[in-house]
Image 1 (tube, rainbow, N blue to C red):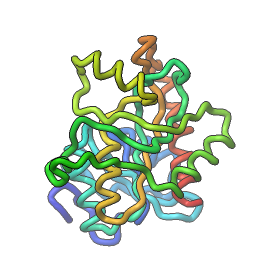
Image 2 (cartoon, rainbow, N blue to C red):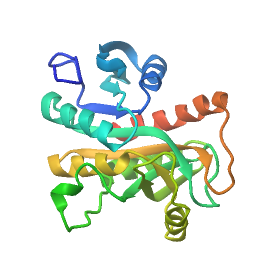
Image 3 (tube, one colour):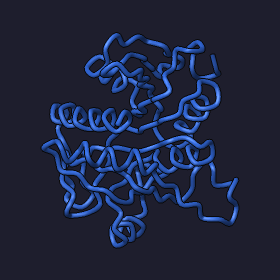
Image 4 (cartoon, rainbow, N blue to C red):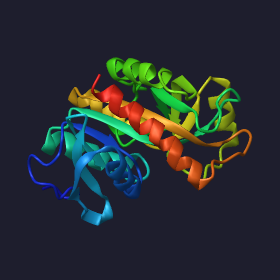
Length: 234
C-alpha cells in the first residue's frame, strides 16, 4: 500500500488506464474488463483490476489536474511497477477542424507549468508520447468509424481560464485541444523509462461553444477506451 493507493502488491497490472473521474474508472471496468475487482478506494479514488482479451489491466482514477495525476502516477510506477500508462479523458477542441466526439491521440503536450517544472529550471522540456503506443492507437482509431486527430495538445493548470490571448496562441500554433493532465504524465514516463499516451474524446469546443450531452459522452468514451486498450496490447 501507499499513501494514496490501497492495493496490495500484485493487485495492480503493468498496464494502467487513467481516467480523471473515479466513477468513469468504475464504468470502464464494468463495461470493458472481465473479472474486474476493486483494488483501491482510498479518498474515493477508485481503481479496478481485471482483464481484457486475456491481458491484465488496471483502471485507476487519477483526479483532476497535473498535481493529482502526478501523485498517482508516481506511486503506480515506483511502488507497483506500472510500465504502460494511458490517460483516457475528455478535452476541449481548439481547432475548427476538430468536431465533438472526435478522438485525439496526443503526440505532445504543451503547458505553462507542471509539477516537474522545478526540476528543469530554465529548460523547456518537451513532453511527448511513446511512439509505439501512439502509432498503435492511430491504427486502432482508423479501424473504427470515428474521427481521429494526431498532434499537440495543451495541458492547462486551470479549468476556469481567464487568458483568451493564450488560447488564441494555442489555436494559432495548431494545438488541437486542451485538457489538464497529459504533460505531467508524459514527463514522468520519460523520467522513469515507461510508456505513456493520452487518448482523448472531444466533449466540448472552445471556438463554437458546443458541448456533448451526457448520454452521448458515455457512448463516445467507449470508443476512446477500446482504442486505448488495443494500443496498449498491440
